[in-house]
Length: 350
Ligand code: MAN
Image 1 (tube, helix red, strand yellow):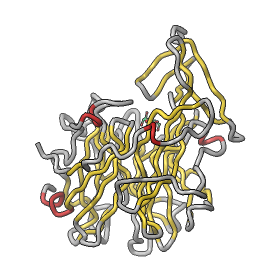
Image 2 (cartoon, rainbow, N blue to C red; image 1 turned 90 degrees about the horizontal axis):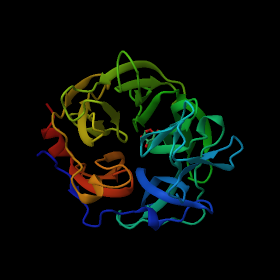
Image 3 (tube, protein in one colour; image 1 turned 45 degrees about the horizontal axis):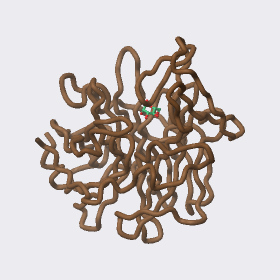
């Protein structure tokens, strides 16, 4: 067992009942996959809030956004022969895929990194326009030259892509549309430019040749991306055999850029691992962990909305350069925290 995560005793830090739904008639099914940043001396989470109407035995119902931002509820009889459930997260009806929940992003902050509260005066971030009618999810936050870059999953009937918004005060946001079109998610920007360029990890998916692999791209302005390279692939027979995707912004270490990533197997078990990229040219992967550094084992990780999942897209590095507090979604239902030693992760790289 190579799980080196020191889980918070207070886990889960956030459960669906801890926040209020965004609209009457909805309930929160999951609080998960927070982006993390430091702002005004506090630790902040931008958490994914997944909602749907209260369910009854005979029907499934789920919200979608209209292009002008209002919520429509779709209700289907469970015995409708044209309805097919893929898993707890996705269903198919008359040849069209839908999500069973609608996600928005919400800000929470904390002085101790354990107890989080919703501050007054900050907006909810919701899907806007035709590319986000099925919601926005799993936001990464990178602070580059004084601006916060928010990269998140934008979901709509035309697919799953990476949206970008930027802010300096968390009250006003500039929208930059999709920076990586469908099918793409798990986009993490580096917090420093390298040789004058922005860098980002991203995860296109290929249904035939290729797979769910981590790629890297660079950009002169953070909005227009090119020079794509595939750098981390899935490994047959391993814990990360079906899909891999980047976590939060890479951590600069003397040995290279350290990235914590998630890997899933054919049974949809999501674990965490790590890889290391060269400091001056992050398209070069120097090493990778063989075994996972975190495996879903706690009860709140093995059972929930979608069990056997630990998934991270946010962390805070302490001034000692070693203590990395990772916030993560557990079982697609709860927000949890765990501490890693950067040095201990580096020792597991091969
Ligand atoms: C997958 C899962 C879901 C997510 C959709 C769209 O099915 O990660 O949680 O809502 O993709 O991103």
